[in-house]
Length: 279
Image 1: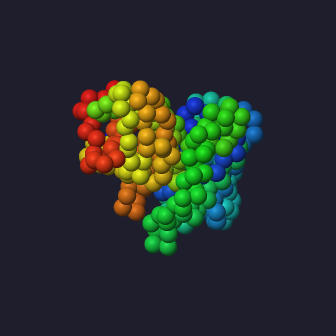
Image 2: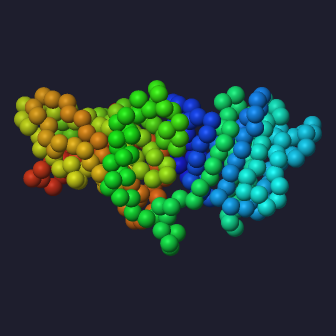
Image 3: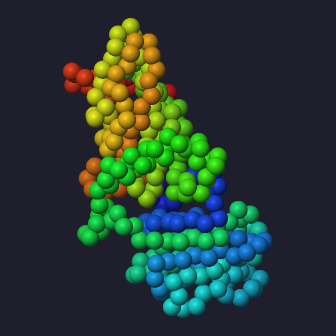
């Protein structure tokens, strides 16, 4: 089972653009490509930054410095640029009594402006507030239009991870092919695009509201489904569904690239039996 506890990545297949926003999470390491040849990278926090700590980040150019930073104590932002083509370091930012780690790398495709913001979806007790159905519908629509965003508006995919696992789960009379999985980091939600292939001569009925995925011993039930519930004989039908959180009010932090088992319950039965083999 793969988790995303240590690193918040951008979409693997698309450059996220020179201007981006990221939700604050002290359990995430943020990848920040830093300007080197032209311009600087500006990093902004919601309020005053208490401190900055790094090994090869300096306020003046020097031989052992990989990055040059400009920061005035009390400010909510700083600017930084890479001094060497292979520069890499981890910068710890102390903000609001918490430490946030930025993984800095010199890049020819840098972020020129990075704005960190407080995640308003967190409740008063620090837990995550429930995501409303309208938000889930918006995420699902974005996943459906992913190829268009990727080609024409890659900036809109900041914070979105995509995987095409090409896994097939085998059931009695039908198969489930997992074509695409998208992860929306801010909402801790995964959107699945699957295909149901009915290999039999009979119509198969299933319950969209009971779609779920299994990883090892954990089962994650759907938070939204766009599926017909019907597989005509000898047919392939598409479906989308979402997984949000861990079912207990916390985050799942799941990588979209996992060995997923899609669980399907037939209408009028307890469950469809999944064979142990999958590809």
